[in-house]
Length: 93
Image (cartoon, rainbow, N blue to C red):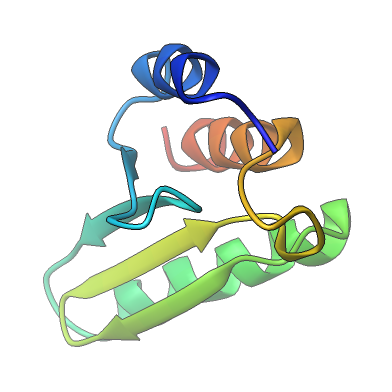
């Protein structure tokens, strides 16, 4: 698990991501007009998780999709979480 100052530095470089209240995950909420784009975003996050073998928690509904990365085995954040978040940012840019 990463040290808090390293988490803060890595998070600063990730546009749109924030630390979860418990400090064990990074989250980003994507907002859309309608339901279909939210579903597409959820599918993109799932696809990325499968490609990287690092699966996010995803919740979505009309107009939003929230993605959370954490490393369950480590009990918190690792480099893999930040790498996946950065790649997801690239894919939606």
